[in-house]
Image 1 (cartoon, rainbow, N blue to C red):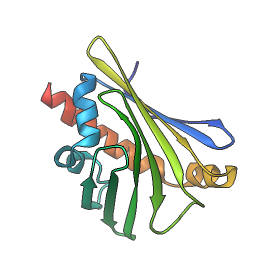
Image 2: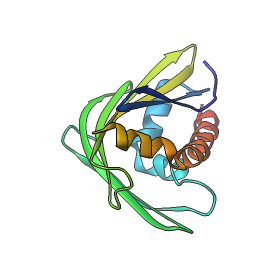
Image 3: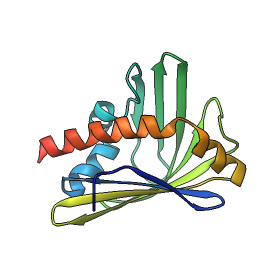
Image 4: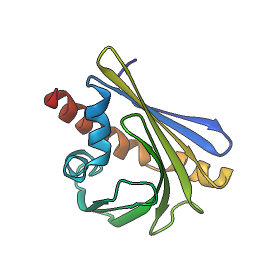
Length: 158
């Protein structure tokens, strides 16, 4: 397990995002699910701020995120479909200004080996066109910046 961000297509409608962290799974799970921790790492590339972070962590509960940056505002949200702490979260995802068609379903799985955690997110889109739009987007830049901050935060909490 390494700490490199990996984004790979799995099928014509899915991508997989993975990143290792030098921290126990419980800390990484908390960083994904507690608003006070999410606010510290999920604010995008330099120049962006995290304006709204609402999490109702229960099956059927909703989450809402809004970022502000040089290019304007980006909001998204969804509904939690499955939660199995500290190893699995399944939720929907829909952006306010849809930059890809439809809604997606994301499944985050966290596995721990010797105190290190691999977070693997599989996202299923409604179509290949949606998946391809995401793969062409600058998403990787924002994910890398956020995951680097997440790594620094959880490693400092051990």
